[in-house]
Image 1 (cartoon, one colour):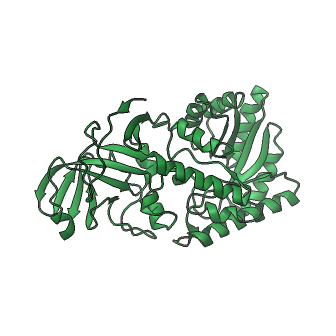
Image 2: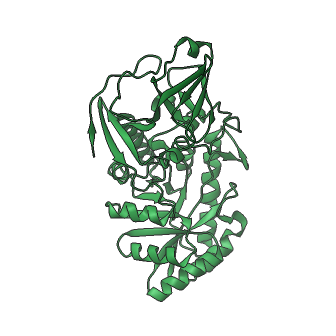
Image 3: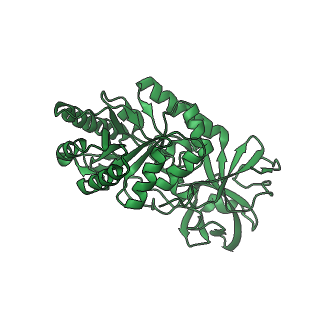
Length: 385
């Protein structure tokens, strides 16, 4: 990793005198805040006596995954087999691919990887399970699997009321070891988006714990009940019968989590450093970060968050990152922000709405500890297959 020259501290209005060694746009990570976030979630899991298996899709950096494991995580979660391969190549020995693997090529790769590390894969359909069984049988190999349950998000996952029948069929397959069930629900309550993450987490945990108990009465040995995103993990972990939580965003946090009340903006470790490249009018500043820099999947003005703009601009209370094109970010300036008299060449820091998708847009992050800046490659960036 390349060490950069120390720089001056931030000015009051979010302008930066220093950081001249960094080109913009650049994704900065406050390492001390990140460390505190890692420790806080690990402490929560210990208090509730559940396993912590962070989702590495947020950071995509093996060195950070190793920090999470050192703090107490049992392993990590990924979405793609390519991410698992990168993580395993850098020393991660326990990985859950929380995504249905249905193509022969991906299943072959999973089998090869499971011969080297402890690997768990997701399944949510009979067709998918049959494909896993067929290829595992051909290799004379046993794959550990978890059944994904749809608890209301209407994404992947077998419908809740059909889960028992599917679990029975999977458990009868000789080359699949069904050890658990899992879900991703986010901040949903009674099927609708909510800001009441406590109630959402408790409902999520209860639904899954009840299902696990029902499966056990059918003779299916479910040992792992895996739930919980960053907003709901603390509350789902408190439900009796839940054994594991899989938060991801907490490692950096973002504006979305702050709006949900999970953290404060001061807890957000990630921000994007941008430069003002144009001042067309008093109420408008253009920066060099657009949709290729900031994630746009969490749109402004949508329920339940009702965020204004695509990020929180540090130090400029009435400025809004209102519009993005590929290479341009349009910041609308209110009276207070206009008084700051931004100049072309000034630098600003912006906390993105969604840090996970933002990280995947960058080849590297810049880790900041005190006044030392270090480039760290995002090794699993773009590992989508």
